[in-house]
Amino acid sequence: MEGQELKLTSAEFDLLRLFLESAGEVLSREMLVEQVLDKKYSPFERSIEFHISNLRRKLGPQKNGRERIRSVRGTGYLYAWPKA
Image (cartoon, rainbow, N blue to C red):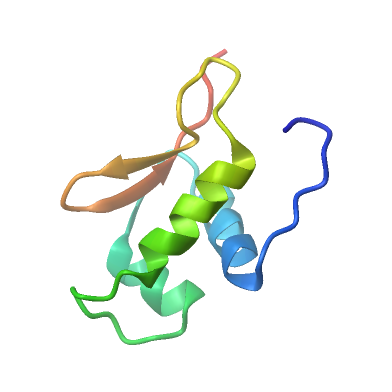
């Protein structure tokens, strides 16, 4: 996707901004739901996963083939910088 313009929804853009500002840090589902979707967190809320899935698809993998946005089981998500 390098060099191509991405068409992102406002939620996807806000997610990407948060991930890039906090690259390498785990962001909780609760924080993402509250900041990106402006909703009170519920463990049954699954729309954040939908937005993350779409963002992953649009961004594609890193050059090394690994996912840019990684799931951290039971915690949240992490934007991983490629290792040099």
